[in-house]
Image 1 (spheres, rainbow, N blue to C red):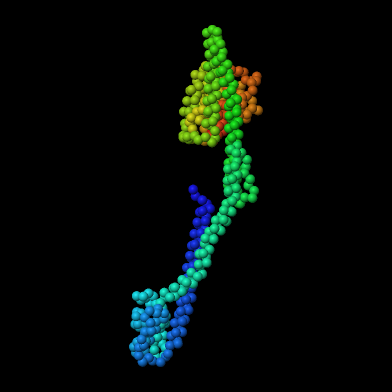
Image 2: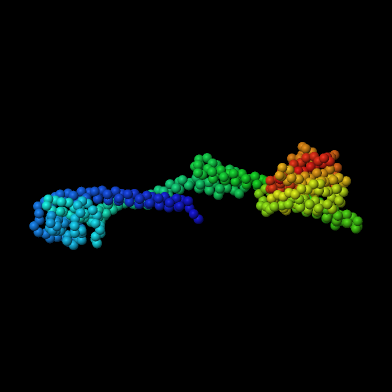
Length: 433
């Protein structure tokens, strides 16, 4: 597991170490430049202090191991008069002024000048200057190096104080009960933490809404299932109490109808759960023309039994991107509702047209329709239009979920569902993709 605190500490210390190293290199370069300037001036002064009289003979070396200044003196005839360190290999001929010479013993800084009747050459190893510059840089930086552990500890503590608001938010979430979905307080929080808390509060709000919706759905479903299950239980008791074959046969028919009603309600509840907006669906290209033919064909025989004339009035070629199974459930619910609520001798017309580039499916019936004041509410789950003079059929058993499922599936596919009045006076349902 990655730790933000540890990562910040490592990166900050790495930046500090790189900065100290770069500063040390700059200090070393500056100290070396000053040392070169100082030692070059020293070589000039030593050369100026040498005697200008001609030497009569070559003097012997003073030291074979001293790596300080090496002096060579020639007379005007090119005869070497003096060599302070004969074992140091230097250029046999002097070049006037400053120069840098590479030898077997490293680089040397050489200064040559004419002093009186002599040519003087003074040389000094650059290693002395480098050691002096490195010493200056180290004496400057070693206090900072000693301070690195204390600096790391200070950075650790400061980062910990900076991350304290996140720890408070974490503790607030850890100590919450599972059902506590109230927003987290966002006062006295840094600007960097506030977006996280706002996002968490938005998530908690969505969870609260989803849980409330789920609780309401479960409560409504339990309430709606209680009635058909109780009816099934009563009908089963009637079957058990039947005294003759006729009453037993009638009780069994009622029991089968009750079981079918409960099964239909369970299927509707499952379809509604699958049609939730957040549910994942397999989107593909769906041929609406073929799909409507299939849905209408599946209900033709049932419509004939109900005495309803069901057919496709117009069907143009059109396709949409969506879930074929979900769209089949949506159109089947609409066709089923239209045939159920249309009185015997009525008709249900289905049409598919392409208007302004958008497919529009219309299902018109000659049934009682839905009053304009209740057309918005019929999309609510378990809501059913009250029985009145205009709703002649009383043998229609429903759960109030059909249009709720239709709207959910339409929302999944970016479609709109509108309710109106058909030319025959019944209900007109328009699904516009």
